[in-house]
Length: 183
Image (tube, rainbow, N blue to C red; front, side, top):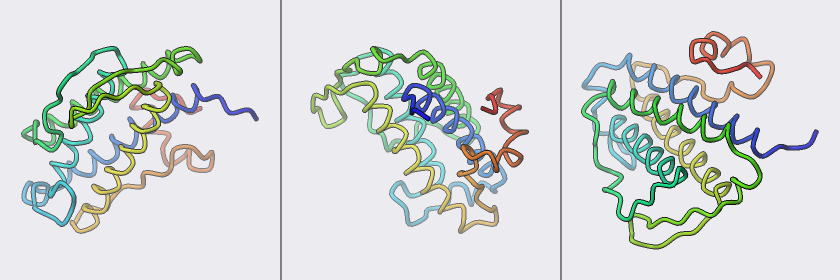
């Protein structure tokens, strides 16, 4: 089987949509004091970490779409006041990322995107490298939220049941609800 990078990126975008849905659904079961509780983590709270994920995803999807942002706001600001608003923002950017990855081809994956990062450093990277970075970034911070959830009364959801055929029964209903194909 030959690896098709475009199909892999499209699958990773769908995995992000599904994983974020699972994570946000679990967080919706938390009482507000648990959701906003200060914890030993990089961003301090579940809410702040979810906000960071959504904000970075929005930033990179904008960059990938051709919006040249010269100076981003601080990515550790809590730009959403509650879980509902950050969940809506995350779902919207996840759908945009799926559409972007579905439209990729070899030429578009090689296209160089130029942007200034939050430290005012100029970057010029191929779309494929930016997408790889974005997916790793998402996984990294979802893992932090997963860990923080383990210290609450709400069990953290499984986030690794997406790619293997044996896991399909555990994700089938959610995939249908999110309009994500099973393949």
